[in-house]
Length: 55
Image (cartoon, rainbow, N blue to C red; front, side, top):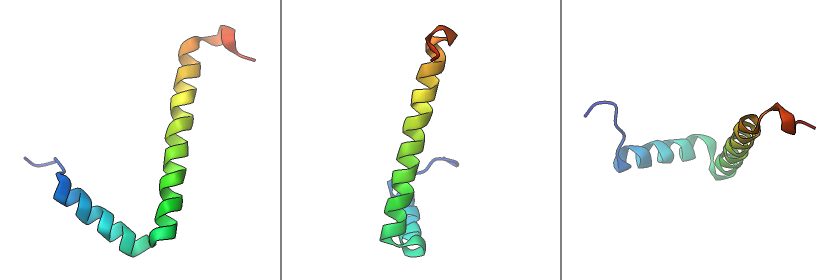
């Protein structure tokens, strides 16, 4: 099926990214991405609570 990534494709992409960026840069990139997702989820959760909860 076109447009679907399987495990082999994802592993190849990760290997290429590791070769390009190196292990330390890739770890920093993953940490930043994780923090960004966490902040986004917290913002969405705060937005769902409504304006009465603003400080």
